[in-house]
Length: 394
Image 1 (spheres, rainbow, N blue to C red):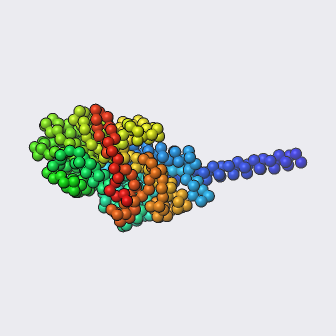
Image 2 (image 1 turned 60 degrees about the horizontal axis):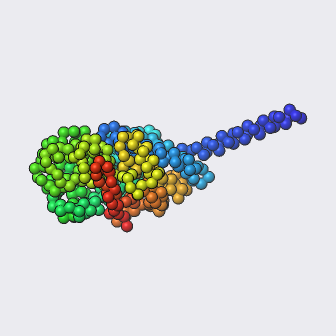
Image 3 (image 1 turned 30 degrees about the vertical axis):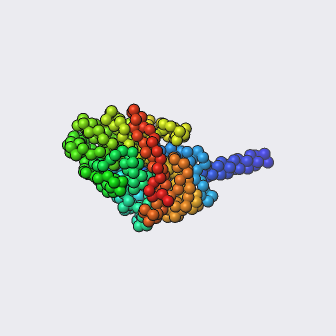
């Protein structure tokens, strides 16, 4: 009898252990989140920071109990590939994420050219895509599974140029952009924004990504003596080199990088020449508008990239939280169900409570609603000057 009871108790123990393992496995079900990012080249700080923030958001959500959908709990796993900020590698990454890995949610994608390559697959294969790409051509009712995770030139350019033009007697401006899909779309919007602000665009030039010789274009711009120079979508390190060349030629006008994302890259290459630069996509942790959690995220990104946190990277962090809210609202992990739910959700972004809008601009509410934060380099420090409403917001 005693022996029989021992066998019975052993069987119960095994069943209990199996039950715990099964419950644990259910609790740890993973949803892979893909990322198409520049992890090498001039745009690498954007991609490396975005990868770090995706993993950080996923870890925070797991620690808080995961994503609750019906009777299951899910956690996120971030999978990043290097798109090298070009269309060819973007197409390879698209195939790896969608065809090879079978990923159904893209939590971050950077660069209009690689994003176009990715979107050609995601929309056809029923994959939900979050992107920080600045092209308006990738949004709208034709692309129901695509959402933008940061304020783009479409949101930033108008408010920022009006603000800067209102502070200085600017009559003329010269523009410079990378010669790729990102730069080409940014240039159109920036040109229109300056013209709307009553400023004449006296030149608009291009350079190839990877180029570090900016003396010729700086000489051309300097000779025109514009009141302002707007480097639009030029990355921080390249922007610093341009302003350094301009300063060496004696030009000392108003300096703007509409979608400028960080101070450290500017300072590293531009030194004192970048004093006074206005940025439209950089975040300052100085002052009363930042909190301990934001400063901790900034410290993590600095450790990973050597530069301060910026809006391009933050978009991935916010997308992870938006996906959690969308899945829980839809009570589904089907991308199409989540896409239908996203325009109705509110979620906690890096900046505070947020949602989606932009129907007036894009034809459908696919734009994450975030403030336009204007910052300026003063005495080697990035200072927040003002917060403006994005033009796509209601």
